[in-house]
Image (cartoon, rainbow, N blue to C red):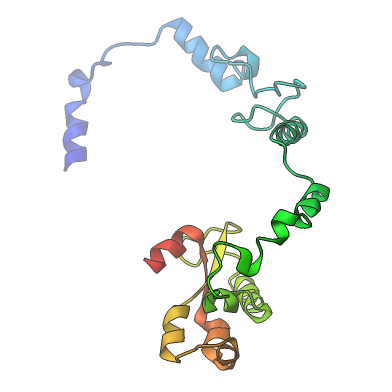
Length: 201
């Protein structure tokens, strides 16, 4: 009904363009637009087309970009050099240094009687990594809630791993390896990091 009333409201004399006609200039512009005369540089709204790289002046593929791939890569490398990112040789020197050696194990102020969370140990196992990868392959690396592909993915247990550990009273890795629920692919699902937060919450 609304559509019909709007139609009646703008019919004939109620229409502000009633009785008016296009000028010859407007008709020529409209005909030229249809012919394609105002395409590209001939268009009065032309703003120079796609942007060019600020360094090498190469024409870019997308409007939002400022640099081509090669120039962008050189900029990143120069920033890395300025920020003094440590090379592999210096990393090895630091590892073998007195300071690094004497802060390992019991000599470290954050040492807590050799305790590492059991869940962390389970997640570091090769079997867990294989389970996680097989879940990703089955779900084709797509989040099963939002459908995103190739983002930061997580393999989520449908029953939380902590609750499984409580149910079966798991207190060692050998006990965890025996329980089939943890290693069954059907109990796993692929989620992106955002959806995983909501599911855990």
